Image (cartoon, rainbow, N blue to C red):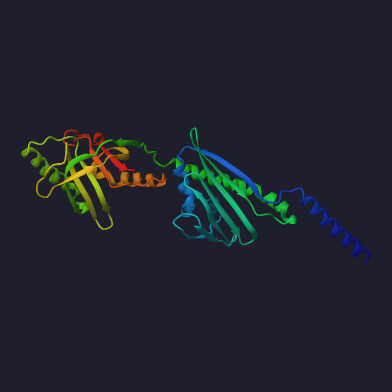
Length: 330
């Protein structure tokens, strides 16, 4: 009995010691990690806002090959959910609770083996040399005996955050830097145009055919050309192989036009303009890049885009020097 009593007292003393020691540890995991990236906030924000993009940079996916993710989208906005299962790391889910485009994201994390709500916050701050990205954690309160374990785990989680930020930095800094010019068109511009919906295969011949017809009409009616030829892009569907174009030559004012032609007006407005250099038939990747960049920046278009053919390819034989200005109304 004496031995049992001694063991009981020793066990009680150990418990008291653990409890007292636990009082000196933080009651939750709480920290933040930051990294400056040579990229715009929008280029970084999209890597975090879209949970499916985490597959490319998440440190936990790299460390645990048994993780399987599933996604529940709410237009990639608040209430978007990422659930995961893992034989090594356990199961859980992460929910976006707050978003300020290109500025802030807050998520709630719940783990199957740890009670309570944990919150992670991302901020994206423009600084000299790029964007300062801060990723912070505010964990759920831990019961007293588990506080030492939380303190022990925090260092490992901080290293994982550093790995994640470094991976995002590598991805974001590889994205092309796009030099936009914001321009203002002070007055409406008129042009004689031919609009047609064609297959993408006809693109090689449609310009010469339409511009030739308009040029003949201008010559026969002694009408002066006011500016460089242009093309308004009303619609493009590569899956169904069609494009809706309006090819036009600017004139001083609205006039009566010939059969199969119409007057086209570029209204007074603001637009984002990009100077493209290269062959016309190689523009598709550039358009995809530009539309993606506008979407990242949260810029909505107010109408169809158009392009102005600054350089005549018949005069400039070096295709890399052929300039086409691409306009996106805002």
